[in-house]
Image (cartoon, rainbow, N blue to C red; front, side, top):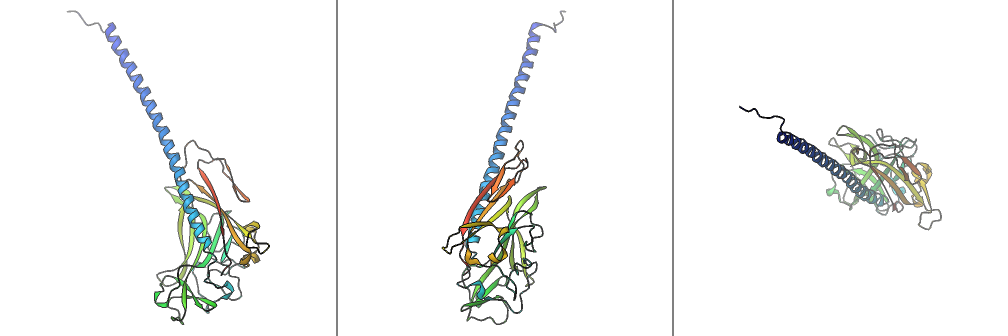
Length: 320
């Protein structure tokens, strides 16, 4: 019986075909893998940019709204707001020694309705214990909403009781309240940047401390995260030097003298710069860009995070 020829030309040709087929399959798989990686990187990049632009819109909306309301005091000058007797205690109040008394005016102390500065400086509010240094904070105190009657007051809020051309701060349930007065909802908020952990990574977050009344009936500065991805804030104050209602000079908030903060009639504009950072590192990307936040600079140190710098300004009216 004739034995098969294992080394016949036909069998060798089939083996060569299989090797070529495997090689082509490997090349095709490599091309598909590369295309997938490129598409994934493009998707990640687009996702990062979309996140940054969405955060930019939210940041603008928030700051424009809050800063534009900072001068509203229902026709009262802040000098017509009397210190409460006895003083209203606030747990974790955001006072600054020698600069601002905190949530409510105190006899013999400065009380500022608008205030900003750089975290880590001597004028930093005592409540900002975990804030990122070198970034600015913004403190706002103003009335909000429509005036209420006594029956409409909510237990978790504080109010300004207006009587003619004077007012005092009260809590619902305090003595001496009646329907002869209007009651304006009062807001005290402080915005700043802090670091939080998300999915095992440290991310910058815009934080807000807000005056609320807790379940025990005590006033306290509640802390909450507002927007992820806010890495740095810089604030400049526009001063009216010739009483024409327009800002002629802009000064970084941390360089504005304490006495100038108390002269709200000279503060006409607030310019802010917000540096946003993507939450996730991007493979193959290195950020070494220099960002100009007004008169301040931020140098990226070659990290794998995309950033976006936004800026705008808000005209503010005197506290009245």
